[in-house]
Amino acid sequence: MKVLVTGAAGFIGFHLVQRLLREGFEVVGLDNINDYYDVNLKYARLAETGIYAPEETDRSGGKNRIYPEIAFGEFIQSINSPGYRFIRLNLEDKAGVNQLFETGKFDYVVNLAAQAGVRYSIENPDAYIQSNIVGFLNILEACRHNPVKHLVYASSSSVYGANSKVPFSEDDRVDEPVSLYAATKKSNELMAYTYSHLYQIPTTGLRFFTVYGPWGRPDMSPILFANAITKGKPINVFNNGEMERDFTYIDDIVEGIARVVNIVPEDKPAYRIMNIGNGSPVNLLQFIETIEGALGKKAEKVFLPMQAGDVKRTWADTTQLQNKYNLQPRISIEEGVSIFIKWFNNYNG
View (cartoon, rainbow, N blue to C red):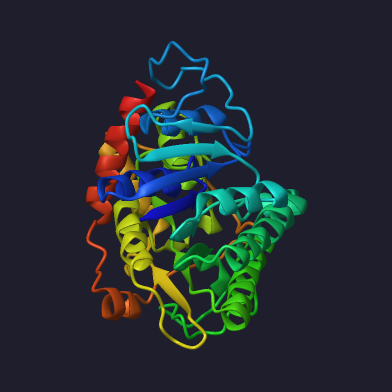
């Protein structure tokens, strides 16, 4: 079976590629390697899966490693896995995406590529429309003209906005987004429904809840906190710490995606939305204390008001995840943070 994973140099995509390769899938990875955050982290993830620029001869690793740029539009074969190839491509490049699908003949597509970040969507809204709306439309059109067995795509817990009802259920109303990022993710769900209805494309949207773990994004709180605490710098604690997040360890997220890929919706239309979260929200101050304990160092905290576009609480109702996929997230905050900090120390050592 052949699967396309977009966002393959990203946090979740990197881990998913490794999982699919272990299961024997033939995988094509796609990413535009943009500079929203340090591209060297993205190249380091790719290097872990055996993807390097063709001219590269020095393949030593480490945080301070500077990787040569990978050119757009050329396939690179992994030196680790014969079943893995990578291409650098923008989803907004409609002709490039169409050509990829025409030649790739994919059985499954997992679309994880997107412009991420709630706060950044306030600063740079155009990037979200181009990547998350135009790019996703190109994926849908490519699936329409080059039929696949199942399109799985990343949505987000942010679509629930400031819902006061908890835990958040897939049946809840999600028409009051509080950030443009959330609005684009809700738009993806509506677009997928339309294409499932009109063209019988089986689609499943996954609402991820605050993913963390090794190789995570440096703009998210775990790495921001760990970096600042390690360097003796203060950390910003928004809403004076009165926030809760349903922190979900990366292995539980990837396990969910891997199970979902193989179970195609059979409804009419063949469309499904699914929460993937831990189902156990954690207070922000408790999360910080867990990081402090793993690092063996206390944080200096700067308490600030709530940021625009942010929400006070996220909490996943995982009933459907358990009933339809027999999956119960299993990694506790203590275990997950411990593993994350070990990676953090090694990567920065």
